[in-house]
Image (cartoon, rainbow, N blue to C red; front, side, top):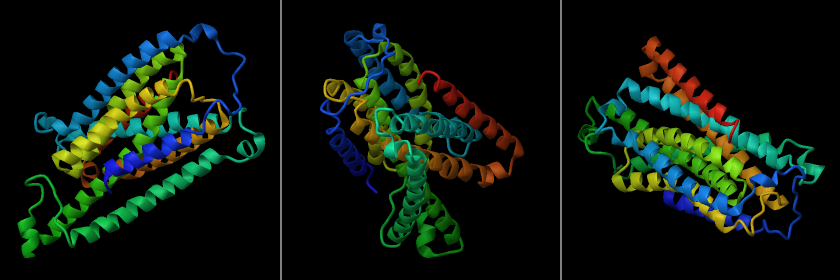
Length: 343
């Protein structure tokens, strides 16, 4: 489960698919396009600003939870960490339902695609369903793989997080150590699978912005994406923190999260003369990728993030904290849903 190799392979596959989306395919432009909003030079300036702002927002969001030693209030044992994670989980949930899934519907139901089969069958929900089941399979199989690996190899964790001496001597505390080790493995699987889903839709979002020359939509999109990346990054950062990776792995995951949307924008700028977001191939590829990403994000948000925390001992032992956490989820989901008006 090497995130770096997985992400690179995914991006290269995505680029290969996009190579077919050239102007040779039928173009489908709306007759109602407002040409007053289309200016390549003005749009390019906004895209460069977007790359810088989104990169900064992503880096700040994902790094904040990782600075828990400097900010003790954000330590995983503190109530504030649970509330921030609940808020960020709400953002991720709304991203899947309110942004990525509708985008997939728009792409796969486009009049630029033939009615048969694309408007005869709900491909978006079908692919999202399969994606959610596939995510469950990856979740389950990865846990099995990690458990077998633990039996033969030493697991690298942050110093002092698990008392391996007790575990090795098999005394009365070994059951607690085993439970802590299983929990650690679970957090590592969650962090890697969640980042994989985020990388997919981040590249797609960035590509769409980079290829567009409509500055009327780019301007509000910058603010929406900064909000999105900041709080989605906090959710991912919390998962990375709980996974207790070493510095190298943390830096790798932070880099991939922070750079994928700016990379997508830069890629869109580079392909703007070749890539057409209204070509049939582009619509199908992007629509299917969005559907896959939506299924993965919805599963991760509901099962691995929200259900895991709300059914955990900390929230189950305190009704008051649980109510505050529900409020945080609703605020996060509501704020991200509101962003759907502009993005």
